[in-house]
Image (cartoon, rainbow, N blue to C red; front, top):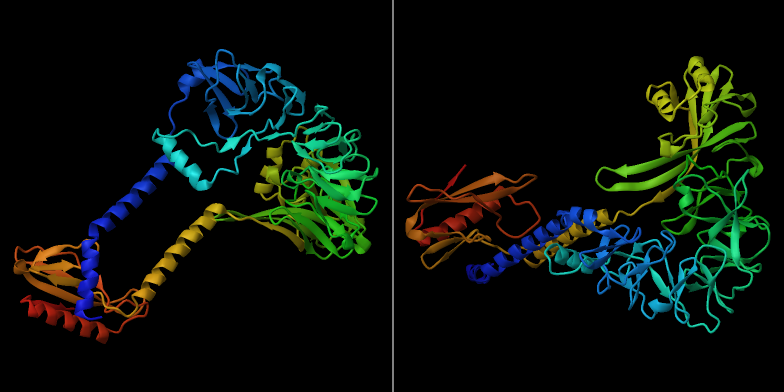
Length: 592
């Protein structure tokens, strides 16, 4: 790149320097505004909390206006609502999110269009009608997925600086039902309503369902009466998951599994005992691998629900929405007996579950795991139950001179393993006989080393990996920055960009500062050659003025490159720069 090319490039940068400054300033302002919007307080709500008139748990009036609480996002003003005529239903739970005035019906702060408030009535199960139009409206707020992230950020910033309303990040989801000559009525079951021809779940039609016979599927739990499912329904012929028709025929041995553990119970499992099939959140397990058998319904020491088939242990991954194989089935002929919560006997071996999590230092939760363990050096036939820990926290077992605590607290109580070894007979006796034993007492035994993880072999693991949106955004930002840098290097590859330009009577530093020095006031320019941090060499330049002041050192390379440069190459370039300075009567020197 010759001197003329350098001057052209410099002139372009110098000419538009204020544009660069404005762009950087705008970027800084945007980032500052975003940080201010996210971290600043929206203002004190003390006056509102003290003076607002509560109509129920959702609606309130304050200074002549109506406000609605939308859980997860606070209060919203109900725009246009008439506070003087505003009413709510007597029920403060099921229908508390529905209000109406003399003109409109509201779900929280939003209008349910087409409903006549004068004839409005609740049907039950969160269905509402005015005799003509009908709606389903959930009493539980949900994330507004129709609101784009950039739109939400822009509205959030606008709210903080007082030029926009609060973004509708959450709402009470509502669905308008189709017109019906026979009207609608609520039926047994959560979110269910029917007319003469159709069944609806949360406002969505169940295909081919019989409105006369629809009812919830039973939830079976060992030793207790059946409950009713809130997501599985049957009309005696078909079976549904929410509004999805499942590929199985109804019969008495179709039921929902009751799961106790916190994390595992966040998904629902339907069992078809007649065919040995399982459906997780409406997703069918592989029929070719059936029959499936649930390992345990307790799962207090698990993060996944495990099912045993002849060729392996399977689980439903809620993140991928797929059924996955955790590993080989260790149970002989798939025969096993649960002798305590999450503890199993198969043949003459003892197996148990252990829960685990993997957290990144900055990335947060990376995965949750459930491990199937085999207890070492212990036979099932040699184990003897000797007592319970306060009859509800676990029980104590003995094998020869060794003692074991079978836990029933679980990972949510910081006891992630189903079996711990008790270090001495005195501790075993304490666990088995002490009255009013507390959970803290048991955890203290673990922290004191009197309870220790039992010596075991890990047979298999079920793992659910989690994507962290913040971590993904960081990767995109860093990756984008690297890609932009590489693109600039490619476009300017092997081109020389001098550390200064001599223009008219000035020496101008060739960076975004564009610092100018009058040539007549320059005493000398000092150059240095130094080793680069990793490899190769780099040049440095400093301007000394006749008034004794010196500039900061400016670092430069001989050309745009990612490759290290030799000392000889840098020295030759410095000599080239010195020659250019000499032409303009500027002294220079190369120092070590």
